[in-house]
Every structure is written in C-alpha cells, then in structure tokens.
Length: 518
Image (tube, rainbow, N blue to C red):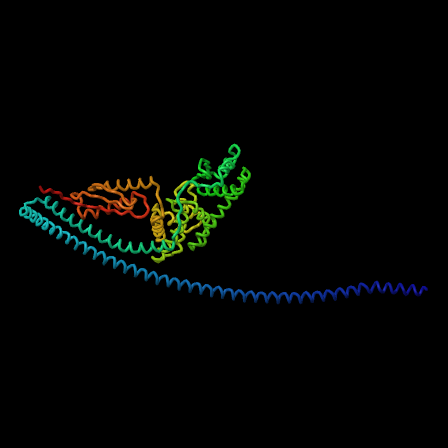
C-alpha cells in the first residue's frame, strides 16, 4: 500500500517536472514554425510588391507612350489645320487683292466715263443752245410766213391732233367691241343654251303669304276656338299671323319667314284633316310639322348635293342649302337658283379648263347666306362667307361667295366663273320677276344717268330697262364722239346701278333739214 502511494507520488512529481519541459519544447517549436511562416510571408509580400512595382512601371511607361502619341497626333492635327487655315487666308488675301485691283480698274473706268459724259453734256448743252437758237429763228420765220402767232399755231395743231386721235380711238374702240361681242355672243349663247337645256327648272313666285283651303266655313270657328284660344296658340307656336276674313273656305297665313309659314301651313293641314283642334293638340301638331319641315330641308339639301355632284359638305351647310327651298329672290326659288348656278359654273369651268368640282361647290354655296339672313344681321354675302369659314371651306370657296356680287375682288378664276354663272341664271328669260317699285326706280335711275352727260338731248329706257336709247344733239356730238359717249355711259351705269343681266346703250345722232317750197 505504501509502495503504491510512493509510486503514485513519484509519477506525479515526474509529471510535474516533465510538463514544463514538454511545454517549453512545444513553445520553441511553435515559435520556430511561426517565424518560418512569417519569413515566408515576408518573402511573398516582397515578391508581390516587386511584381506590383514592375507592373506599375510598365503601366506608367505605356501611359507615357500613349500620352506622347496622342500629343504628337494632336500636334499634327493642329499643324495640318493651321496649314489649311493659312492656305485659306492666303487665297482670301489673293481674292481680296484681285477684287481691289478690279475695283480700282472699274473706278478708273467710271472716272473716265464721267469725264467723257461731262464732255458730252457740255457738247450737248452747246448744241442745245444752237438748236434753240435755230428753233427760235424757225418759229419767227414760220410766224412771218403763216401770219399766225406761236400760240395760235399750237392751238390749231393740238385741235387737229386731238380730232385725229379721237377718230382713231373711236375706230379702235368700235373694232375691239365688235370683235369682242362677236366672240362673246357666240360663246355666251353656247353656254347659256347648254345650261338652260341641262338645268331647266320651275320657279315659284315670291310671296309673304300662304293660303290654306278649308273644307267648309264652319272650320273657321273651330280654328279660332273659344275666345280665340286656338288661333292664339297656333300663332304663338309658329310665329305666323293667321288671317281669318270673309274669304270663303280659306285661311291666310302671313309671315316674312317662309320656314315658319310652311310649318304653320303643314300644322294647319294636319289639324284640319284630324279634326281635333285644341291647344294641346295644336302644340303636338306644330312640333310634328316642324320635324317634317326639318326633314324636308335635309332631304332637299342632300338631293341638291347629289344633283350637283358635290361631296364632303358639312351637315349643317347641307341643312342650310335645303332651307333655301323656302326662300325666293325676285320670284326665283333660291335653292333652284343655287343648283342652276352650280351646274352652269361647272360647265363654264370645263370650257375654260379649270377645276369643275370647285366651281360647282362655290356655285351651290354662293347664296347660302340667304338661308339665315332672316335671323341674323348682315347681308347674305357676308353671312355666307362667315358660314363657309365657320365650317372649314377653303379660301377659294370663301372668296367666290364674297365676290359673287362684286363686294370684294375675285382672287381666282372660280370666283369669276361663279359671278358669270350667277348673272346668267338671274338674267335668263323667265328666271325672275320684279316688283313695280323696283322696276320704276331702275328706269328712272337709268334715264337720269344718261341725261347727265353733255350733248344728250333726251333718253328713253325701254325693253323693261334692258335698253336705253340716247338722243344726242348733232351739233355738239360727232360720230366719233358717239362711240366714246356710249362707252362712258355704260361705265357709269355699271358703277352706279344694280341690275340683272345686260343693259344695251343705244346712242342715236340724227340731223334733219326742213324746207318748204312755195
């Protein structure tokens, strides 16, 4: 037991002594390994640093080389550009020097010419003085030979020349008018005949009243209603005045607006057929009649576009064209007139070789302002142009509408053709009728214009104002003066009067000698 304890103690002591020794040995070995690893790492680091330095040196050398090459390239480019600039400057200097030399030469030439001109002017002045002196001598000699003074000779010469010029002018005017009339009459007849053949249409009379036939006089009382309530309702709804008088079996509708008058006529016809006449039924029937008239206007506008071959028109313009169906001018239906003008304008455009479609479009729209001139202020020309601009018609169409009565200058052949077509349609036989007041005023104005000229003894407007015969004093107006007088009268009539068609100016010079034998 003791032996075992002693052995255990010996082992423990041995371990206590051996552990530090072993630890010291291990520490030394670890230190050596560590130092070795550190040495190896330092060597690797130095190698990496050396490689990096070498790489940096190489990159630096490459960068320097690239910078030098770029510098050389830029320098070469600058040298080349500088050389080109110098060459251009040299050329410019040469051109400038050459121009300066040319200017100097021209200046010298101009100076020489000025000197020459001055010399010539001096010579001309000298010669002029000589000519004036010779002229004075000649005038004195002529006065001595002729026995007339210089002023008397001038007056005689001017009078002679004036008569010769007047005669030649009159003859040329007459020849030109004859040639123009022959050619114009021939072409005009062809165009008008063709237009009338292709555009023949019926025309209605201008009026402000419509007459509705009644089945019996008893219906008048039913239309008037108890205490006049039916007739008041109808007048209020339509804006038309109903005249119920002693005319048997008829009621008169009076209104300046033809559309309202047509609505009232249709409504009254429906009420008479239906037999139920009271305020509620009247309101319903008037609305129905108004829709019928609107549809009728739309259909009439579409039919007009189809007849004329016009496409792409704004729907509102189409409706307004249809509204012309209920408008008249001097007894001529406005819609029929517009269609006729469109077709005539198309024919004329084809004859002269321009766009017939544009001419037809302008002709159809030329009186579009008449569809609204009851409701808006302004002439139908102004209103028509405004409508065309509003609905994006092109400038040629707008100008044709503005210029068809000469209010503005036509800027295209289309506008001129529409003017001519409008005049042809309005002036052809049977197209229009005039009121007595308009007819009388035109005759009076025509005679006043012709009587205002010197040498006119009296004048007579005949053929419903289509011709005026002017009697002149033979002693004051010669045969040559007659030609010029007729021309002057026609120009004044054109400037001061408004009339459809053409007025013939007929100047008559008659000399009579009366004697008696005893």
